[in-house]
Length: 328
Length: 300
Image (cartoon, rainbow over all chains, first blue to last red; front, side, top):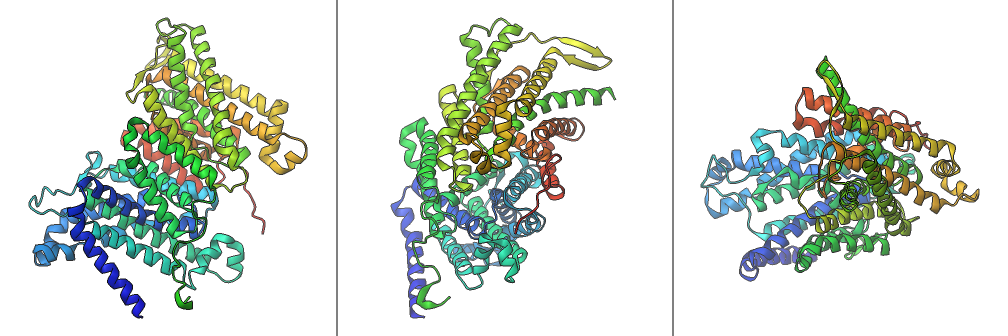
């Protein structure tokens, strides 16, 4: 128990340090990139649950991020000022407000995840992948046609209703706190006794079913949890950027998330984290190359995949999630 | 009524372009079980190489049928080579490494061609040279058929006919069908599987190149990112017809073209992009193997 308290304490101290020191030590450019990396990590880890651990190939994850981003932004724009008031206003109220849009975004995305998962799970393999791709695009185009969230103009958090209220999050600590929570939640889920069911479905669905694993329920659960965290990632994205457009959530974004997961190693949480960080930072690190950077980025993606088809980490983890002191 | 006929005609023209691209997806899926996401970019390269071929051969200013044929052949050759190269570099090293790794390299190749394209050709749209002088060849009441529409349709039909001949009547076609049916067994029977796969990429890429030229004729604005949406839509068309099925891709492409045009004409153009994906999801839920795909049984 003391180990757990020490870890939580260390985490709080680290996040507090990040909150106070990051603005002093980092210029805004680096801070923005670090924030994007944190969000990419959340999205990648959430996708890893479905693609890597449950073996259900989804390539429409950006759609869930879009729902999270737009619903949380709508929450902040239309209700944010009222909620802030009822929390008492001031700095502490802003801190207390932080979870509201995130949970709102997560829940809306999870509801959509359920709607997509139940019919889609009749499909297997490539057909499931294609259906999720279609669902993601349908979500994106549907949002594009909703005028209340800006439609084709994009949607800005700077509310016309309450111009004095700024609901953007500027703290990296928020992003990374949520990232740590996401990784911990998903690690707890997949590396628990019950979590074996996810991997059983991945390895052989028919065998799992015959051993009494409720495969449909397991798959729906994976989709539900995964889309919840994708929605949270989207909500963070909306609230750190302050302006969102459906173009950020096209199938290209979904492909990018799939690349994080496959490049990191299917079935490895730490792999997803590393790949998300590296692939998000790479285009920025390569910025010195000017126009050639995206060319080099794609060449690197292709060669890494050819050199390590099993992904950077395969199915290994850098940390022993959930296997501490023999506790399952 | 006349409006409807005109819309149908436009839809079939646009659909035949989808069909040409969809054929490449479906053939590659047939032999490799790989969704070749770089295929839309091969189509873009088809339009681009046509643009440069027309300028270098001095055909840009002088519309003529021979000029069009020369540009078409040149672009098909370039893209055929490109298709073989993509397969050799990005997919062959991963043969036997599972099915996800090649999917990521496909995405990588697609990104590479888009970005290299923006670098080499410039990100601004280019105007495809008018290889044919546009004029009306036929008119019945309000319905007008232009020579460009006719050229697109006839070229697409000829190419599909040629493909059908190759697949059904030639040694190579038989080998392709054998590999698609059971690759290891085909290999044991002495079919050179790698060469057949290369050949399939060449064929598919040549059709995509032709689609690029035909699009250049009818909507002359071309740019390095033009392959993204049509590529994805053509893939939807392939699934609609039954992925892996050659006649399925043709019918799926035509159907999708007609449906999209009708939605644009009678509902709203903002839903045009959504309709393809709605069809996709509905088809997958009720008939996942598509219109022409055979239902599969699962072995335990």
